[in-house]
Image 1 (tube, helix red, strand yellow):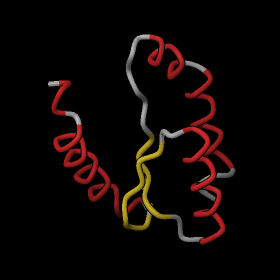
Image 2 (tube, rainbow, N blue to C red):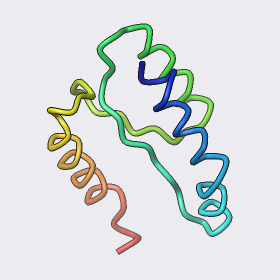
Image 3 (cartoon, rainbow, N blue to C red):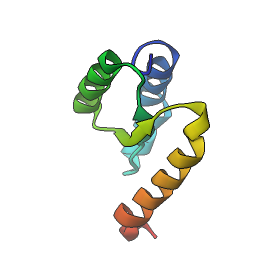
Image 4 (cartoon, rainbow, N blue to C red):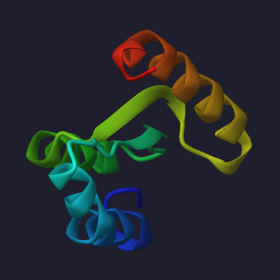
Length: 86
């Protein structure tokens, strides 16, 4: 499950460690995800997003076979929303 198990745990470790330092240096850490296969996981992801405000979710299933879609979507989002950081 996307919001339970290893992926949630990994995001929490990042939030507790180097993301905190990044924030202290006025940098934002964002986790890029797709849609989970399970609607219950989506509810948990929405709650996590509301709590931490650090999830960027795209409208395709988060799956190994969609990693190229994820990378392209992330780059397009950065190009559109992060112009001031260039």
